[in-house]
Amino acid sequence: MGEGIKALLKNIDDDLKSKDLAYESQKVDKKRVPAVGARIPIEKIVVNPKQPRQDFDDSALQELAESIKTHDIIQPITVVSLKDGTYMLVSGERRWRAAKLAGLNDLPAYIRTANDQELLEMALLENLQREDLNAIEIALSYQRLMDECDLTQEGVSERMKKERSTIANYLRLLKLPPDIQTGVRDGELSMGHARALLSLKYVDEQLYVYREIKEKGLSVRQVEALVRNMINPKVSDQKDKPKESKLPPAYQRIEDDIASLFSMKVDLQRKNNGKGTLKIDFQNDEELEKIMQVLKL
Image (cartoon, rainbow, N blue to C red):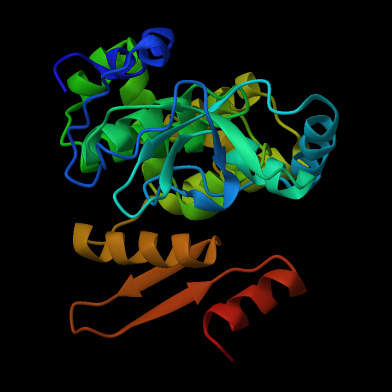
């Protein structure tokens, strides 16, 4: 762990030349190390359950499969050998899936030395080095490094060779409502848009601006200006600004949670005697249908 994540993956070429691979994990079978440069039967390869990547584009996989049929696997996958005779993927699941589609019987592979925690770190690093990651995927990978590898933000910063402020900015995105996170993941808004929304205190304010971004195609600078005006509004510009909540903090959190659940503006009013009202604003029949689905009506 002290060597850093990059140290776990360096010197792959040296590993291929080495004839003495030491396996630290109890799950690793020291006797079942294939010859250097060996091709591993594809049916003996299993997915790493700690693999952070879950979504694979079917059309992109099919394109890669067609390329593999012509050129074979150019970059070997990386695995560790297990006692039951299988090999667990550390990196290269996309290549493995495409190879199966292409009808390959075996794959070239690097054999790595790693324990369970190192396997997770290696998988997360490989995931983070992909060029097509969106900001939410990066944030989730950083969060997993902290949660499952018992690292602080400083520890993640050190291993990833990133500024701590960069790590913190990504992690803050995970505080946004689910629909806004989905918007970032699906490319409907950029990290710049999302960071601007984080300046707003309440969930319904964030959702209000998110709708404005989608409906009006606001740029990051326009969103930043809108958010500044909502935080310090001019008297003439208060018409569309969500009202400042007067709820106690505990009930404000309830209102925010409900707004996040429905991804709509919610108004919770509560009197001192415990009575109150709950109002959910919807903009069209589709949003009403969403409310009904959430309520299972």
